[in-house]
Figure 1 (tube, one colour):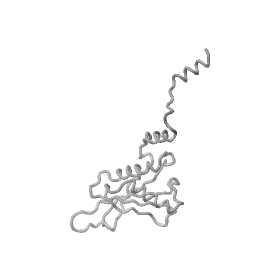
Figure 2: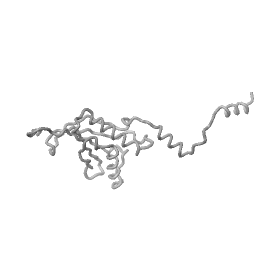
Figure 3: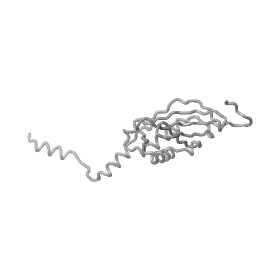
Length: 167
């Protein structure tokens, strides 16, 4: 058996597609990447808190990012991750329920708050935009250092007449 013949046979049998540039190949890989957003965050059990502004009780969900160093396209992934978590928090909620968020990090003097909105007005891209603004103004903040905490708060505003005695 001749090695040259075997090599030629292998080369003839394998078809290579050299029509794409390296940039196009990267785009194809990113487009085909389809991870589950739940793999990149942890959503803790809700804690009931008092909200004096609304004179009602709310559920506070601790939210932590994880495995983000494994994400090939973090900027494209984070809105999906935030949307997935927002949907989980708002599961089974009434249409008039509100959701807000709070970013907490030891390098921040005070938490960054995202005002309460209806779910259809709160998007993962909005959370990412706020987070990017905070990170631009404070370069010491790192998403992957394990210290960034996000708390999502869901409120069911009181309805009807009278007062609600939650306190």
